[in-house]
Image (tube, rainbow, N blue to C red):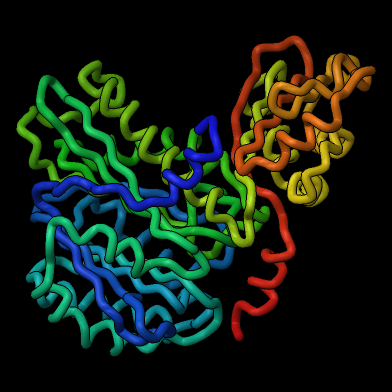
Length: 410
């Protein structure tokens, strides 16, 4: 993503592959939104493996509690997702809504309760009328299709402005394998594990323990590197389902050399979805990539990058198209990470503004201002002479962000 035109392309929903052993459908259940789909159901063939990670917030939704309880079994037959109401902070009623939904699906599919995964997104604290969901399960199961990706992606949106999907093809042991995924997220984005909601499906033949390792590693390079507003959601959920329909021997070990291409392709899927969430940040006009180099470790570089990315002063400066590099230096300093102040350098795009602890003497303000008018802004930071490096992604902070969140419940 090096040019503004790529931003527009990123917002268009791609054609995603039909994956053997997987179908999905969606509908309007009038949970909160009128005239749009707000409920989806995915069906997986018996024997599908699953792994995932969920928010580390201490206040979590009833669906997250349910998924954390059942995921260790490692099998999946269905996924039900609603938008509009998050089913968070709803006590026993929220737990019962999840249980009744899972019961209905398990009865219809003749599968175990612990094979039915649930996710909800939307307003916190409002009670979810699960009858609106259970009354639609029969219809959803009767209208499952392999290519219903875009409708499903639209059904899980809240303040998002476009549906998010991506895919990659690769090989395992000479066998063609498909990976596809959809996600939602726009605000309350500073994932402490994954993102708001993201679902990955592949036909690869993988064990559930391996999926768990792949998702954990991939998350660190993707959703763990994005922020819109520094707020971690109560509903963050990243799940990956493997239908095991690809004709290759099952892979169990993350160090298996046959897995190399697949792991790279999966990382790209996760990164693509993470970037789309940032591009769709609430009220965002600009996508910002922050590259940190010279830190004492990669982890330290990431913390420094996120300190810059989460700074309201940095984000508003970019929104105002002001090359205020001093705010970047401030954010480096507040990160708490070890840096060499005399080695700090800052560039916006190809324009260096500070070098080795001092302001650059000649700065072409006109050209920098022109650069900052673009939709894609890249910030380069060097904090020393060490090998630690990281790239994180964020967006600008605009008046529209305030308007969206001030009026969210009304």
